[in-house]
Length: 253
Image (cartoon, rainbow, N blue to C red):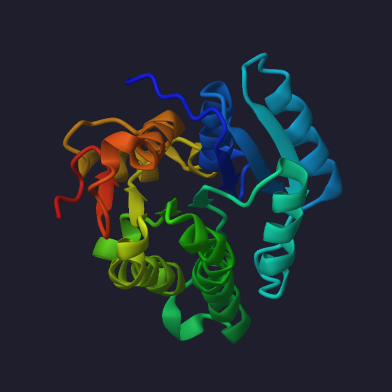
């Protein structure tokens, strides 16, 4: 991969305690950034901060507690990050998300509401809190992790697909509003990525997914991290409103 230098940049990564978010946070720390990573508990935030700083890189990491279901907490989080990291986020990675799968006709209202709140409304609130200082600096990157499910749909995930598709529409619209201020807004749509969630799948389910992936393998969290670093870099300064598909060819937009 290309070697990027994010020294002096403050990067806020939500859902950074594990999976894709954790690897994204690790890569930005290695590239010299000041990384603010969120977890859902004090213990998780402390562990995240300790382990990221133990990488021995030139970057620095801080852990923050954040519950994406609490929409009012977005502004508080950005204020805390700005104080502790010395500046407001230059780069926002909207990664935190949940699933509450089930057939739509049997889906509980709370399962719909929680997924939309966490996966879409929280993205909008946190982005709004970060955009204001970006506008003042006339510089910034907003990168949101959507999903191939938001592009092609998936039975049993109407709530998740709606939220992830909403992120794509939100991204395309926001880029038209803030582009003149030097801010780019993009999405990354992962496909079938090897994480803790996919590790519990049975052989039959795994084979079903692999049959629909031209590269015939799962992706890695590092594949998503590399895409995030590219979009955050100067190399992607003329890319905005885009959805970067990282799915091994299972969906070609």
